[in-house]
Image (cartoon, rainbow, N blue to C red; front, side, top):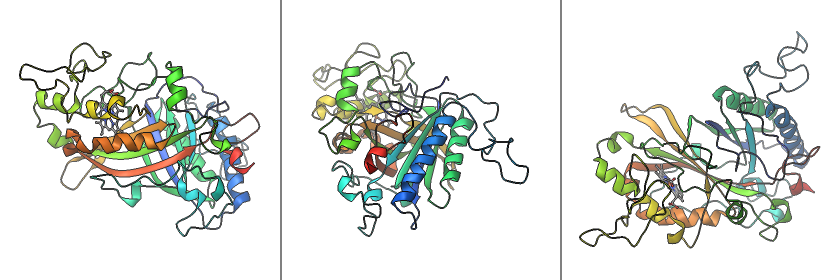
Amino acid sequence: GGVHPFYGEHQGGIVTPAQDRLHFAAFDVSSTLDRDGLVGLLQDWSAAAVLLTQGLEIGEGGAVGGSDYAPPSDTGEALGLPAAGLTLTFGFGPTLFTDADGVDRFGIADRRPEALAALPRFQGDALQPAWTGGDLAIQACADNPQVAVHAIRNLSRIAFGRASLRWSQLGFGRTSSTTRAQQTPRNLFGFKDGTANLKAEDTALVEEHVWTGSGDGPAWMTGGSYLVTRKIRMIIENWDRVQLQEQESLVGRTKGEGAPLSGGTEFTEPDFSATGATGEPLMPTASHVRLAHPDQNGGARMLRRGYNFVDGNDELGRLDAGLFFISYQRDPADFIAVQRSLAADGLNEYLRHVGSAVFAVPPGARPGGYVGSGLFA
Ligand code: HEM
């Protein structure tokens, strides 16, 4: 709950304690939008975000205080609800800088950070265009689902004629903790998720691995971050037929406590050199935690901030369920390194990556300014 101010050095929704609910939206800009129009959209989105994050109604007259003869400025479904810890995080996709035809529509192509490029194809990718890419992104996180949905709905409405929804995703349960004060939640495989995540308290690590520093790229990105989303379908019916011991071997941690299989309790560091009676590594070589660990990836780290989803079921009667993976990192190269290592992950038999996107997340807006203003300065 509570109120997270929209203005600040960094955007909210990154090291903010992970809220319980997500509505993530990717947009495509309209073919008629020009540079001034794009700036206007970001200004309008920022002005609305200032109010939404305080739990206030947006626009003249709000939901019911305007003219009886005009549609209300605010759609109204959050009336009476608190801010519920809402954060709104805005990002720019690579296609905003140069579109599919290679055109620099907004005069910003020379300002594209080198780090911001479409992700490479990974082994096993089964990406659907309907869940992939986008010129602009908004991550809305809140402790109340209706508050998150109200925010995306109203921001989409504000964008009418300038940008339209390309895809969006609801998430109902966080799969990461981003501060030590939070209990580690569980993903839909039933395992604790977020144990070894970067935490807000690890300020030096967050500086080093989450925020883009001066000199990393264009100055307008200093204090920002890079956002990767992966819509990962989990084949949970097959997973549910796997023996407990095998489930734990695939993850590399116990299911109950979340302790590494090399021993200890949840927050004990895994010992990759520990071996069992027959000399086999206690942290199996194909286990997820072993392959994703910074030691196996040249020190690459990220702040994970994903959510569980269930989007109904498929025609075979299987839940259309999974993890909407979200990570923030100083450079998408860190995500790429880990995702490449995970090609050997035993969990892959139960996973399918169906969506993917990458966005540059500019630093926070200053009072009176708007998000991403540095890109147009
Ligand atoms: C750790 C599950 C996808 C990166 C973990 C843990 C679980 C888990 C249970 C151990 C607890 C923890 O430290 O959080 C899953 C599931 C996934 C998935 C079910 C897919 C549906 C990914 C992806 C990446 C990733 C796509 C990045 C490319 C990591 C990292 C760790 C981790 C970096 C921490 C490793 C360590 O330092 O010990 N994951 N994960 N995971 N995962 Fe995943």
